Amino acid sequence: MPSFLRQATEKQEETIRLIQTLVECESPSSDPAATARLNDLLVEATKDLATPKIVKRSHLRLEFAGKKKAPQLLALGHSDTVWEHGTLKSMPFRRADGRLWGPGVLDMKAGIAFFLTAMRILREQDIPLPHPVVLLIVSDEEIGSPSSRDVTEAEARKSSHVLVLEPGTGLTGKLKTSRKGVGDYHLLVRGKAAHAGVDFSNGASAIIEAARQIERIAGLTNLGQGTTLNPGVIHGGTRTNVIAAEAQVDIDLRVTKLRHAAAIDKKLRALKPFDKRCTLEMKGGLNRPPMERTKAIAALFKTAQSLGRELEIEIEESSTGGGSDGNFTAALGIPTLDGIGAVGEGAHAPNESILIDRIPDRIALLTGLIPLTRQ
Image 1: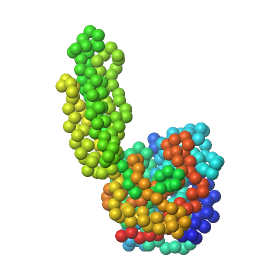
Image 2: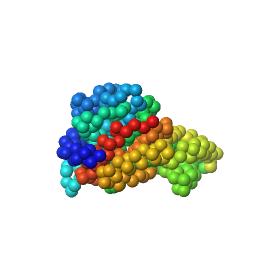
Image 3: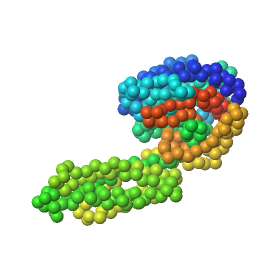
Image 4: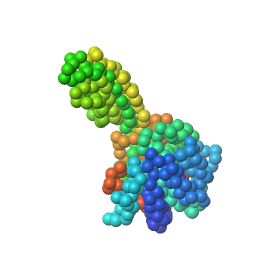
C-alpha cells in the first residue's frame, strides 16, 4: 500500500489534468450529445487499458482484463451533472486554496479520474487482477437513472462486489455504508370549478383540499425511524376569481428500510378527501430502494478501513439521505461500498470543489481495493 500511495502522488498532476479535461466537457443530464462527448474522452483516455462498449446508446462500459472465471468487480460512475451548459463561465475549472473547483468536479468527475489512475498503477506495477474489472459510467444518474437502472442491476448480478465512485461524506471523506431510499409521489386533486364571487358555494376547491392533504402527508414523517415526506412543490388554480378545479402536490419520500417504504405507500394511496366533492389520485412510488447496511457491506468497509491504516489515514463510515446507483446494487444483496471518490464539498452548489491533498490517498485506497476478491 505505501508503494500505491507513492505512485498515486507521482501521478497527481496527470490525474488533475484528466479531471480538468472531464470538468471542461460540460455534460448536463438533459443533453445526450454532451454525455456522449464525455464518453469519447474516457474511451480515448483508456484506449490502452480497457475495452469499451456503449450500452443503450448512452452508457459507457469499460472492461479491464482479469481472470474470466471469477465474478467481476463492478465500479459505478456517472457522466451526467446537474449543471447546464455555460456554467463554466461563472464556475470555471480552477486551482486555488488547495482545491480544484468547477461544475461536476466533486460529483463525480474526479472519482472517475481516480479510478482510471488506480487501474493504471495496477498495470504499471504488474499486479494481476483476480477477476475482471468493469467500470460502468451511466448518463442519467442525476435524474434517477431511468434508462440505466436495468443495465446497472444486470452488471451487479455478475459481480462479487461494487465500488461506487461518488464523493465521500464531508471534508474527512467518510465512506458510505448506507443510504436512504428515495420515492417520488404526485397527488392530483380534482375539485369543481365555479365563479368565486357569483357562485362560491357551488365550487369545490382543489387547492383547499390539497392544503388539507399536505398536513396529513407531512404527518407521516417519522424522524425516529428516518422516514421523511416533503411536499415540496404545489401547483393549482387558474385565476383568483375561479374556484380551483385542479391542484397537484409533488412529494419527496426518504426511507431507511424497504419495509417502511411499503407502509408509507399504502398510507398515501389510502388518503381520502375531506371534501367529498373532490377526488384524489396518487401517482409515483419508490424509485431508489434504500442501501441498507448489511454484514457483507460492513465487512467490505472493514477491509477498506484496514487498507486505510496501511496508508496512515483514518477511514470512517457514514449514512446519508441522498441516493446513488449503489442503492440498486445493494438492494440486490451485492456488497457495495459507496463514497469512495473525491473528498470535498459543494456538490450541486457554486462552491463545488475537491481537496487536492486528498487525491493521492483516495487513489491509493482504490488501488488497494480493486484487486481484492469477494465471494
